[in-house]
Amino acid sequence: MSQQDGLEAPGDTPEHATTTVEQGPFCLARCTCGWRGPARRARSQARTDAQTHTST
Image 1 (cartoon, rainbow, N blue to C red):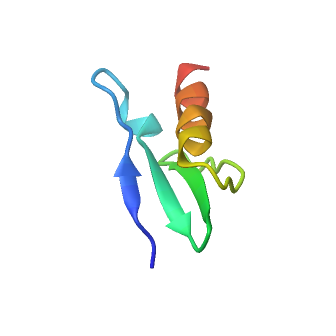
Image 2 (cartoon, helix red, strand yellow):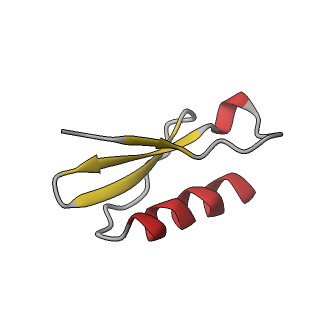
Image 3 (spheres, rainbow, N blue to C red):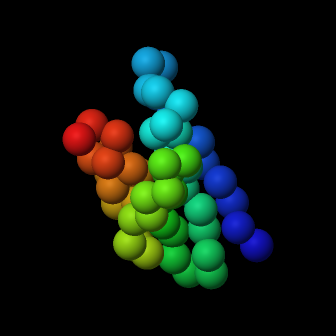
């Protein structure tokens, strides 16, 4: 079962709305622009990946 955690911050453009998705023991960040972060065991690291993506 996957779980999504929306990370879209106020002021983010719709092109970069990020979420985290759990896949088994891993969590990864995804963006509406098509970007996908690496699978992480720590949700906090997946969230950091998403924040880094939207800030660049």
